[in-house]
Length: 133
Image 1 (cartoon, helix red, strand yellow):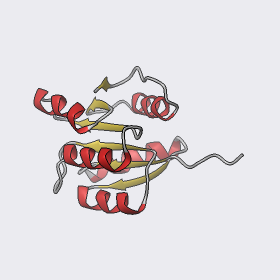
Image 2 (cartoon, one colour; image 1 turned 90 degrees about the vertical axis):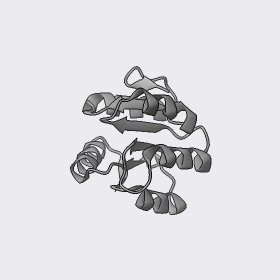
Image 3 (spheres, rainbow, N blue to C red; image 1 turned 180 degrees about the horizontal axis):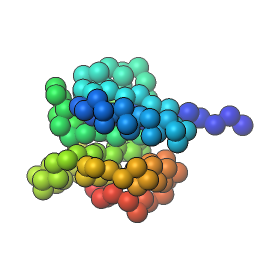
Image 4 (cartoon, rainbow, N blue to C red; image 1 turned 120 degrees about the horizontal axis):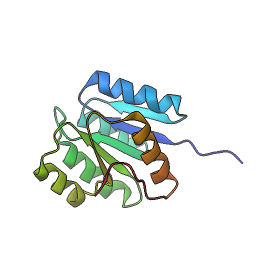
């Protein structure tokens, strides 16, 4: 039986962060689609379907909250959306559940915590890392 690819969408305005997350996930056996702005990510979403998304709140063109809401409306409640941000203000955190985010991590994210959370979510398990929305 062939295993289905598990492509993870990464959207972070920082090229070094997007690259580091992509390299981490590739080493862990995931396929990756990485972007540094919301417009390119939305274009990808028109042609591809990720297994999960890792989205920064602050993007140069589209707010990460709006992008998360777009992902949720396009793919429904089953696609995990992990939001990461250095801005852990309560207004942003409170908005995450409204837009359909699944989990939140403050930057810097511990690599092992993100990987474990992604694996758990993709297997339908409740992660113990991050903050449940």
